[in-house]
Length: 619
Image 1 (tube, rainbow, N blue to C red):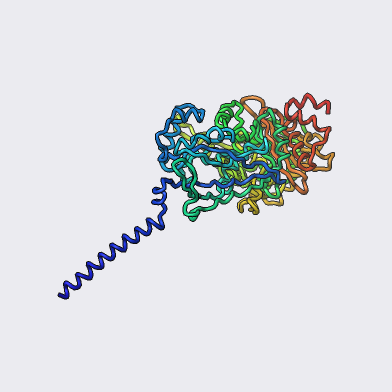
Image 2 (cartoon, rainbow, N blue to C red):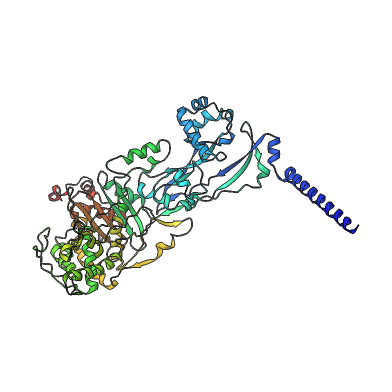
């Protein structure tokens, strides 16, 4: 009996447990779960992602460069589509039937329950045509979002552009929260600072009946979350200086990069040819992108970051500093202008010291400087000696931020090339006979004048001048000086010292001043001495086997209190002193004085159209 009594309590307990489960489930369905109410009222629940306002972009003077403007998208949720008359719907949208079917197929492939775009960038007028009849097509609805509006026709390469996220992007973990049709930074600062500019999404849950009419928030908005706007970017770019630089290089190919040496902030970033950033936003942007892409002048190519060239004679400054550090030359060291070693471009006085050699850019002098660096008698034969010496040279040169990515806040930066001994081992390896040919300084001497295998970008060249202006250190160049109410990223506030002692930089600067303001200096056309502005610079002419030589000029000013370092590179324009130097002088004048003197306006034409030598007699 006691056994039967125990079983009775177990059975009762089971019945009570089952009843409790049913009561709990009933309570959940009727009270907590609104899904059944939705079904009873023939409503559907819509989960609407609220895209936050994208952060704005300003220049260093708080002038707005990039803002937002409202546009409308038509989206579809495939699961909600009912007996769609595709022909009628295509006529309403005024799009080809095949395009509509392709969009619907892509939407189903992506998700049957998530919204996918059918038409994007609709104007208010476009929306008015569609909206009245949209209730006849369940599963389709409109969404409002903010598109980019550019307040400047300049700076396209740095700003980058925003576009609809692609399926390839959606497969990457970092874009897991994005949905088809949403915008994402594709290039430039828009891409690099995507997470900062994007902000945080919000979500709203709404009840909608079968006609698409909203019936209110789901459970009073209990599960809704608010979006948080993206943070604004405050750039170091001077919009007026940028516009002036783009004007100077209109119709040319090349680049101008200007940096504030004291901070590493980029003041101007000119890539020519250029295009207007507004071209890559709004309706038809895809077609306009393809037009730019197929343009033989390659306006989409970001020359300051991606084009690598031999630096020419500007590189002589780096070689001289390395030689001074190693003690193989002194500031008073002179070398004969022996043109049996290498040709010199023009007649000049005897290079009796570093200053005169820099002023006159004497090729034989710097040939002998680099030979003293590479062939230092550290091994018994000249081949091993060159191998050791070049390895030491490369290590010191790379400390100037060359041959590696500087780490600028743009993703497409090229590293350039500072050749190593291993590079030449490979170059002089005879694959046909499987043997190594030995090489010595004589095989690599072109490095002494910035030619040969060296490749640097316009940004790197400007950074070298910023380093010299600072007498031995630099900050990583960057575009963003402030994020929201804060400053730049921490990595842009650290000093990077070269392998050359800071006390040695003072020995090359007098010669650089003589380049600009000395009698017969190769960079006289950049001079601003009439305004009391001292400048230190170096010209360069880069040999081009495919046509006219390229022109370079790099400088900083004022000498004792540098506020701007600049590098100008103009393709196929000849001698650096008569093409690139005037462009740099005008840019520095514009930045330091806020204007260009009226009598110097004609120099703008010379920079834009070339043929300087025809005008020299009229100066």
